[in-house]
Length: 402
Image (cartoon, rainbow, N blue to C red):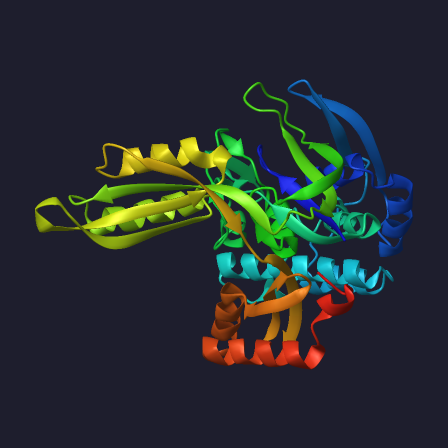
């Protein structure tokens, strides 16, 4: 089973996602043949070597002649019709459909209209359609079964688009990333585009530090901007899950707080989780002079210790942080999407030695479906569990994974 991990150290664009997969081994000629089935006209594809910050990568470009006819503003139905009639591989077609649907839902929320009234502007253009469908086809060509992704930086400041000057992240990007791990990032400007946000939040099984894997190839996708601040590249690691994937090493940090308010502790936990820490929690304790207090604990990867300690010392009243290295045994995580009367719901499966020990519906999916259909979250979760039992757990023959 091949897996991909996107390392978004400098953000991501739709073209950068596809470029990184091309740099990692996807064949452009084969990809071009499949993209021709969309029936789009007046464009050409190119992939050239580009250097960003002294690192070589691939720059993917959809070339459209300046004198080409003005493109129509496509809606969700238009984009889905292109995909439906293209005869794409089943999983690539499903992934692309899910991306455009999620994007339409975000745009509808931002503009206060229904998804049928949404007209894609930049994302409905030929180049963005190629980026989205091309990324799905590239994952299929590379036989990627699972997708992982780092915390997504969004940038800062403002950008200019068809609607005028808007803040970074754009409202659509912010909505797409709601509920996922993000950070502002060190660069002024847009670091993650709506197209990239839609692709990553739809296809990623888990936003996490790089999982244990045997790396077969590494690809770098170059963005258009070239600055001295940070190499404008998206990196993807492709390989097989490592046999040691059921165990890893993490760091547990802890501080004791007897003079810190609940509001500050709650805010600090949120900031720690947003920064990429694996977990954070508060436990009631009793300190000297029988004072009620809290122990604030953090679990993070060794590479994130410094950033987590900075947050603890900056945000709380603690004068020091305890640290200990922990060996951790964990279940192998896999995701399976099931169809319910309330829409598609992802199920998180926990495996050990090839056997499923846990199966849980993704709460965010259930909550969104419950709000859309006017029902309880519990009803959606029950429907997802029933659908999993009805459809069968596809991991058993190692086929049909997302």
